Length: 119
Length: 110
Image 1: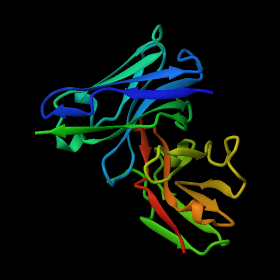
Image 2: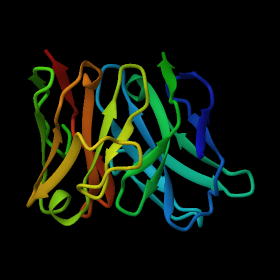
Image 3: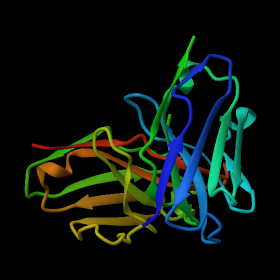
Image 4: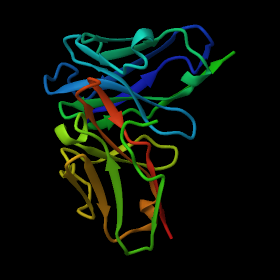
């Protein structure tokens, strides 16, 4: 059974960089059928797609975040990561990692991790 | 503003049917597959429907999906109190080259 687990600081200071890692277990991160993605949800609000990456390193980003965002993958560690620079309070959210197929459906999700941006 | 439009709330009685709509455009719903997610309070979203109308293993056939043109619909029959949750539609937007979600619909089973 595939399992995804987010890890990283729960508190980030305004203007600094938010960094999260998702560790994949129970399956291959190099499976050519899937992308590995990030979705966030501000408190009390809806889902926002952040971006996704293929095991080769090819990535797609949300246009509204692209200038501040880097998603990377480390197949040897079965991990993919998110770095969001110059954060503000608007970046406070629960961040989920998920497995995403070619039709953009996400069948496996991490439990989510709350990241709070403080001033 | 979400790229896909969903009604903020839908309600129906136990045992009845609820439908949730998702409206988009030619660059997203019309030209790509739609998926639907259920999110219970405090939990991660769960995939209910993929590729417009397919159910993952373990999802009961009370849940169904359809797509027509630039709109998609989630149907839930035989409503149970445990179906009370937020529901989201999602797809790919070819123009944005990005994933997109609807704003979510809160289902209340009265």
